[in-house]
Length: 221
Image (tube, rainbow, N blue to C red; front, side, top):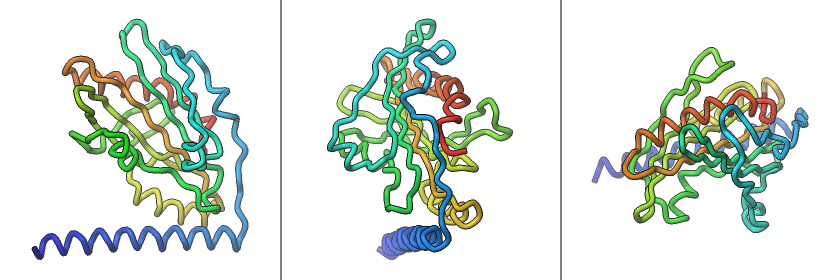
């Protein structure tokens, strides 16, 4: 019982701290002004990237858009003939978080759609143009007999962040130092074929390595 109470207290403190940090950031940007960049629309993102080509242009229902409150959205499925695989790319871009709009964590959305997380951790992915590897959340999720590998991260003006809490901290520091609160959520989903979790993960990582460099010009930087 004491361990449970400690966990709940710790969780409560983290949540409260996150809320206070965000409030501080929003108050600062309102008081001191904010730089709101204008990026190219996500719809202009290439339909052919490396060996990956567009197979389906997704649509997002109006009611979902109203919940997300993102300034720009992209959902597409790409295929790779040589690998015999497909990958879904979802991007939600927010020009400012001063209005209260912010990315919704996939770890909260997936259970609502019936998916259960069988594995959850953070991995490092080496991508072109970055000195250090980027941290990426890895989820292996299942719904009935279907399984998928999910990779996602938050793209802020100066860095790639995996942790939701760290993203809130950087929201504060970036708003003060750079007068910016723009951010993006990038999510990649690759279906597991058979029981080949490793094959799906390798495909997802390869897809991230391919799309990350061209995607940079459409996201906070």
